[in-house]
Length: 353
Image (cartoon, rainbow, N blue to C red; front, side, top):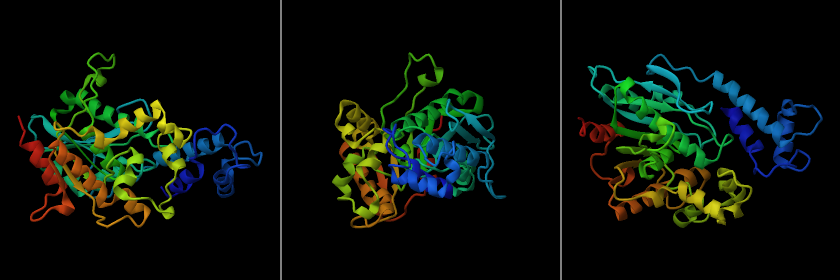
């Protein structure tokens, strides 16, 4: 994972890169210096294509050596099920025991990692996974494509397809498709929020039967979430970013795989921003939310706070209040506070058939 963190900042630059090489780009120059083996044709010049190919090779090798679960980790009943066509469209399914043939609710678990790294295996170690299984709630942990594979708007759609796929196989795995929830941290939290707020993406006329299934969920838990993936809105509730936050118009364009930040003002750019804007999707028919953003600060003072602080949670809460959507922000609650597992159980088990 450390290697991926080093490589991505070096190689992940705007997509308008036909003539970008280590001769005219500082990041590729640094990448060639640190990783000379990335120069495939050994001509002393690292092209963008060589850089991306090397990154894909390294990440593919890492995928074959996924983290091994500890002795106390939950083990999936079904592992590495493909829910889509991309190599990272895989899920692990943890089935609740003792269901006696009765269909169980399901929580879709979505890992974090800034959409640049992360792995579904972490959920086998998570306390909430064990607590959910003990209460008769099954879990599905997702991997999904990352930003070096595709833009954020497509990544989100792949996660939506995972929900649809699980519903399409609900009979086989005895899952109650009317009681699905989502939970995640950081990027996984934002994706869970997007699933909770986005209009249903079911297409009854689709040739693919998976796409005919609903994407709507019963509730969501969002730990260290972002309020919206329309990054042009962030300054309105976070204030202006500082240079040390390492944000830029270039980074914003990369998020959507657009050649430049100015493209966001085009009709295509506006449509992408709308698709990714959880705040604008919030309507009164959305499910209950539990949000836990533990960085309670007056204003962000570093990149981590810029990405995860309480102001994201409060912006979501404000929009939910306006729309009439139940939304709990853990840091702003008094008295007894729910855990992720107790919140999910409350909303999934009270609707049992």
